[in-house]
Image 1 (cartoon, rainbow, N blue to C red):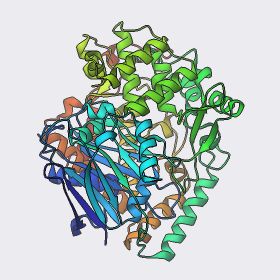
Image 2 (image 1 turned 90 degrees about the vertical axis):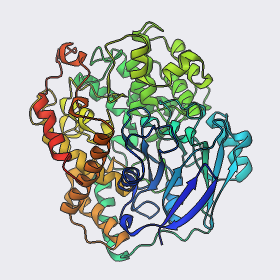
Image 3 (image 1 turned 90 degrees about the horizontal axis):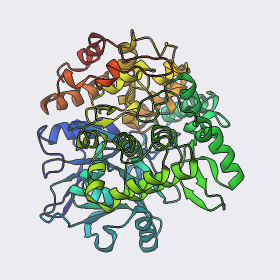
Length: 583
């Protein structure tokens, strides 16, 4: 029996129920977005008692399927005002799945704003306890105390920024060595957790029964096909790009393409790119005693994470991945990896989304709060968020809020969320994804960079404005399904290029659930998820006017290609036309 855990933060009760039949085959994003759409009034305040915070491992999470340890977190977002799903790879996702927990729904909130609890879950049920000395801690100290007090217990937590209800706060999970480093970072879901008075969920999976697999033979067939594809593809195989250089291998690639946003999206090339690139990270890690090829959860065969070491060889932070290095590096004009590592450490400790933090710092630099390239000033500004100073609270509410506070027009956000590490004027399909995703600016929602830059799953000219609606729509649909399975997004490289890999992905889902889904069924499910999400956003007040780029991108040319964002509104609206039909 798959279980639904309902946690009421108002009367501090925990109920374990059988997962309703309606949600029987759902997992991950499919389940979080459907529960949010079903249970949260679209006009509810994101930080109020009527919002709900939902956690759901993916369909195959907790099994032996490769690279499948993802957990989805969903709610109405305080950053965008729309529905939100963010996910992370973490062992705690696998623990929940092995305990038979399909979803945890957090509802209500304590009467006192500063009252915090921890939810303790094991195979027999759960209970809320007062967080006492765990509230208010930075997440590194929190993780150490949890380990000291409860042993190697998995956790999902919010940091000081989330406790202060800042819209830049993410939800933090432990990695394989219990570091507070794996984030469902986007959309301010850590602030929702803080508003619920929930400091953390502690998960003890001792004696857990494991995931029930309906058709073991089919599951093993699918697992083998997918594993073979991942071990064959040059990006995901052992010794391949992600395994040896990490995701930051993209720094040099995007810089060469003129699509690496630099100094608050004022250029597509950064003169310091080679000093912060994946090649430099890997070589420095080798020299100092850091590590590349690190996994975020057991069973990952891609292993794209890393551990950065200080000059004396001591561990500094995990991990230096592309989005974080870009946001806190090139986008702020910073080319020193030790400074970037410290900024990432502050984000991990404070519970901040590194992407939103980097976009916000660059907006603050544009406003004159610091000079581009001044790493020490960036560190001081970011620490203001953790301290909760008046300036820190402005910055902690994200780039759009900061831009308004300082009267700026170059504010690279969509639906209130900061743009990630791909300049839409130089990679125009990803711009369509930023504009039309129900999530706000989110590169993972439909990764057109694959065909536009990496020639994966086809090939498209990144600078051409036409034909990008179809590419973005197809990838958004595929991603919505993938986010529901529990697989890492990076399996997409292999399943886009190797048909047997895609077959294997679907077969593992069928093996777990006892279904007979085809590829067309996966497409239908992905479409259904997106329609559910867009329907929620429409009820919350979103229109197609929200599917538009920041105005400056329409008239400011971007070096080196001197491009504006010229995808026509009619092309952008073709995505919405497909995804706004009734549920």
